[in-house]
Image (cartoon, rainbow, N blue to C red; front, side, top):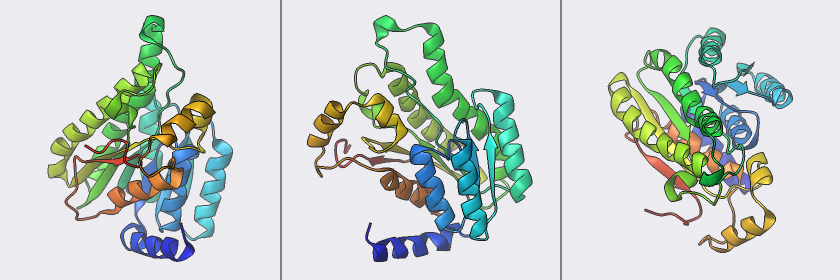
Length: 266
């Protein structure tokens, strides 16, 4: 992004996000790290959850504090209900409240076809992507509801729209469920003043996810079929997430914003 465009973008976001208290899960790696950086640059206070990326989480915390904002890094396994509850409790204790929840934690774990599927693997991926989101959201709602306008943004995936590449059966299923989870929550939580939306990133290169699970050949083939002829990057997703999170007193809820260069446009 050109410098002047980035400056204008951040100025617009600052109007909405300055001083807001944000909790982001898996906020210290990949797309989550980019979202956290954008939140900090937009003036928000950030609670950065991490599972294994403690060093990056601490660096981001120091960066936010250096800018005069509040920040805290909190580790935990969000597939455990107790860890999810503690994450929210520590966030509220640090900030005094919560305005925005960004549910970013998730993983493909590994590629397995249906013929290779075990109940243990199925449940593991579902717990990482979906059950953890339910735990954190349930713990956060009572705090979000104390504000006149609050926001939840859930990270899904293009795989939840189209089914994904071979071997991503459980991952795609869980991400599709997040879209339904988002729509259902928007109806349930709307009367409490909480908007709930989702984003579905497509091929986002330069992240640990695709570095691990996407071959160069597959990435090149996918990119060739993207109408705008490039893959996405983490900043593309972060800008969309911040837009949905910051649209205070807005009218967007229950929506899914597709970030894929035009591959899926329904």
